[in-house]
Length: 146
Length: 216
Image (tube, rainbow over all chains, first blue to last red; front, side, top):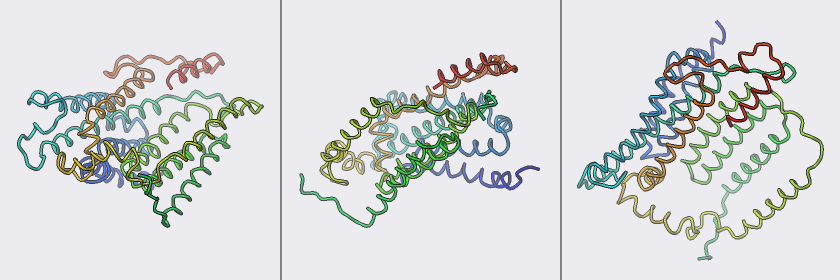
């Protein structure tokens, strides 16, 4: 079996990277990070997987069809939060109406969490989509260019 | 307004060494014709600038730079590099005096402009005075999250961020449309002329190059 050390290392690191992405995602209110960074870290875990096991294996684990759905769902999640605040009687993305009359700005906390989740889903799926499409192409290089 | 003087501390040494390394890496990228080395150096450049952002107390920006610049961009550039040549073609001889003059004039103007900039960390600088100060003052009461950057990004400027997410979404859609074979629903795969042409004739490869340029 080729590259046994790399494969074992990837398998060990895969879950902690995903866990770290979720930490960055949901801890963005309290420390550095947020949806953008978490989405990238989530995508990086799968890119590492693709480097070690091949793109086809990664596409079996996380198919392109699911990524396109995730891209749309993430964006609609963000926009939908804005529409929901409008339906609740506030302005677009004015989160205070989610939990009206809260002394601790609970509405803002929920709103930021929802919106950041939409950002994270869209960024992760878009980055993986771009990666899939670039690395999925077959190279066509002249011999003298090597 | 102007009685603020920047605090000089041993951190300045760190900043100077980081900036020096950034310049060295930039010149190494300029000199190298080996594309793999250039991609790796650009990753190092991003990591160094991330360290510099940490030194400027902009941890959110540093985090993004490390994840996007040093991580994803390097991977995508490697993926793009695999589709093209490994070495940059040698540039045409000649110094291009007009370009050199333009670059020197722009650089001189930028350096001249830095003399008018506020001191580093000046609380009275325009960037820190008006709306920035308002965010710092209002966030504990309005939003009540400890990270003011998140409060500005997701709440005060939530509509801006929605636009940013749309930009990323559009980028993904554009890549699918330009490079994707078949539709996202798994439609019939469209044979790429440049790839399907196994003869590798000159016409096919040039066709491929133009389509790649369109993708950028």
